Image (tube, rainbow, N blue to C red):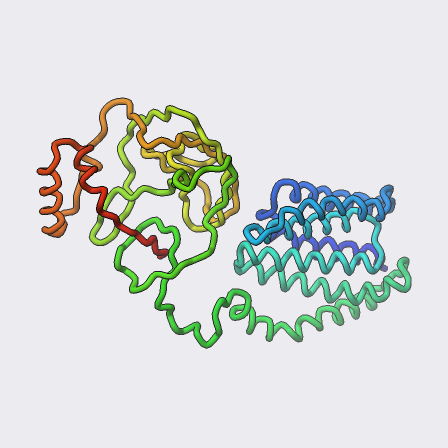
Length: 383
């Protein structure tokens, strides 16, 4: 004989894990801790069969939490407050006493958590979690029907086998349609009939290499690259340093590791807290010029470029200190040969122009002055 309440509790925690495991890496620290504590408290109380804290206390406590994250909701930050509230609501529901209606609420919140994880990352494992959850949800719905009538019901092996077969049969009937539509529907950002037609306009964005003229047209992208919190700055001071292209290879601008030079970051520092959006790039942006960047597994190059050493594509936060000045002194000599290297196939007209500017001024500062009227607009096109 199998206890009906024990079976439903096991299925509820299995459904919860399928919903929260894909979302857990993308949550902030506070929702993570609350969710872990809620699961642990729920399991401990279910084993003891005693719930010292009443459900109305949990429900009352979640009201200020909801208001706190509602105040953070905005067009620039719509996802993180919502998923945080979902995770905390699920934790509160798991920690309290449960009846048939509460198990249905746990199921719904777990489904929402799994669905919201696809807003951050949609990997093949999403389908695995979804199939497992649907199978367990179907069985749970059948068992909850009996549970609502008699919580102390015991099922024989024969009865349990019938319930399991009935529950598993429901999602299996719809599984062929699920496998058909899953690759097409979740991530399509254009009509299905346009999937075979490559877009003629490429969106502007951040790239680790630039090839001017590689695209016939460049379109604007409103997708944020990162967010930052800091004291208010003027528009002219908001110059962000990501990567530095220091080589030309054919028609591409690329980055080569520069020689070591000790830059002296003197002057008042501006502190920022940066929240980069997940991407495939390892570059960590900060206000120019970054003197310190506090992030584990980050590496600084001699020219002030910081890069992530770990796996890219995950959500992270770091603190940066920048010296916002036009000139940064260097202790020792500058490796001019590295920065003045030119490609072999440089067009003759550029060589002639450089020689003309060199003859017009006798110092590097005066030569730079001669370049000021020339403006160049560069579009960073994603690969």
